[in-house]
Length: 175
Image (cartoon, one colour):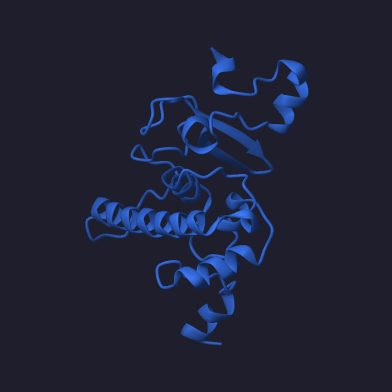
C-alpha cells in the first residue's frame, strides 16, 4: 500500500463534523448509547475530536459530559453540532496563527486559551464558577457545574467512594 491508500487504511471511520448535516450528526450520535464525552472522543464515531476539544465543545454547548448521547433532544443535538463546528474552526485558526506557517514544534493538549480543559479549580470563563474535574482511566473530563450540569457536581468514582456521604452534590455545598 502506498500514499493515500495507506492513510485510508488507518481511518477509523469517524464522521467529519465540519462536512456533515445535522441529520447525519444526529443519526451517528443517537446510534450509540454512550456519554457525550465518550461519543465525541471515539474516532470511530467522530473524526478529530480528542479529550481536550471535547471539554471545550461541551462547555460551549452547555451540555454535561456524562449525558447519554441517545437521550439528546433535537435542540441539544443542533446545539452540540454548532458547538463542535465552532470550536474546531476556532482552534484550527488559533493554532495555525500560533504556528505562523511553520510546523508546530510544541504539540500539547493544554493551552492557556482553553476555557475548560486543564483549568481544574480555575474560574469558568463564562460564569466564574470553578471548573471541576473527573479523572477516569487515562483521561479526565473538565466541566463547569454551573454552566453544564445545573449546579450538580458529578461524582468522581475514587473521591466520591472515599468521601461517601460527605461528597458534595451541588456547587453550593462547596461553600
